[in-house]
Image (cartoon, rainbow, N blue to C red; front, side, top):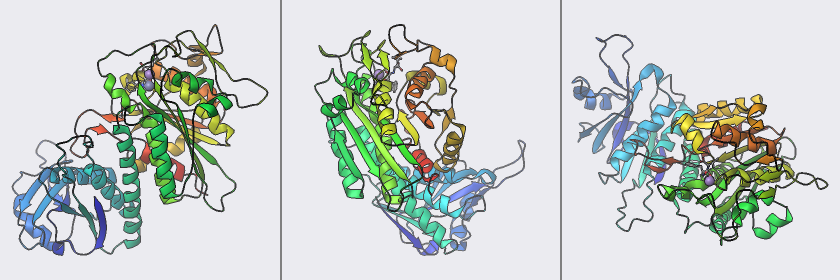
Length: 508
Ligand code: BES
Ligand code: MN
Ligand code: ZN
């Protein structure tokens, strides 16, 4: 999809599909209150073209509701698509993101190759955020996970135009530019997550990350087995030792010119390119889904891409611990004891008793977190498809979020307001840590059935220690099970937008 921003009146825009947002401006309550669909444009020609249908009651401007009109009178566009954002008083840029996405996804199967969206002007909708959300909605909606379909019909909308008036011109421009960068970065993450395990090994994930880094001016280093041994990353290595595919320790660095002090943000992603469970092997049903067990890593790579292009004034290190979790004669076994990487040269790392080889994400992340700290990270965020327990707790609506520092979490909460992603804070407490104390070593890698998302977080906490840290469990969000009106089922790219905003909140 190519995108453009034009400042002009909407009536003269030549396009196959002109998209206009509409809201329900009814404020009365009660069962007699009828919806009042109101177009979010002051343009008289558009108002006139849609006036007849708005009085019939067949379009209520509910969220993601659409109505298509052909050959609208007085407009240069071939079609006019009305799309609802719901109640006007509650209209948000997030509703606009979804509405534009819905419009683009309805254009795709119709074979329409170009579309334009008229930026709504409404007090509830700040210009920059709304322009950004609209642009994101279009680019995210155009993505379909059909790379490997030989009957792939190219149904992309080739050209998307955001149409705006000159009011708030600078805000609209910056919002639009950000929207393009952010959504393309999120789609980049989705492409990685969509790749099957045979096409995206840890080595190939490393190559893809390094190629991205090269084209956008990030430093990239991709290490493998030797470096893991050198750093004594016994936890990370224990996961990869059962695979014929070597691990990849992917390190991306963003070092803006002139920024030599202030925070160093460490982004650590779980990059299990396939999770069989290892010797504690998973059942066959749905195991194919475990190709998306690198979605946390992909989110970090996508976020680093957006950071490279948006250039915030803060240093960022992105680390992805990539490995394949396989059963094998050389695979680790339940009962094995592994020694994690240590932060200090004169003290060995924590010993981990492996109870279940399927709790592998926390093992690779433990060493990733320690490594980020050893490189000077002052604040950490990790993302991982870590536990099924998190999906049990929060469903596929909210991701789980954990933090050892309220001020750091506060910044993340603010980032969510911009990103529109949903995460719910879950507790940490010493009593949960007690559940993963080992009789044999320092810590064990599972804590039993109850509170599984929390004991997994406490495991990571033991390695983050006092460094301000946020853990995101995205197991329920990284893969969308059902088509939604505004986004395809498949890889979601969740995390990219929120992690990016959190990073930007540290700008000096
Ligand atoms: N990758 C899985 C978690 C997962 C489950 C991600 C469902 C996406 C969807 C993780 O490595 C895992 O296997 N976790 C185990 C932990 C258990 C053995 C303590 C789980 O959640 O069952
Ligand atoms: Mn697992
Ligand atoms: Zn896993």
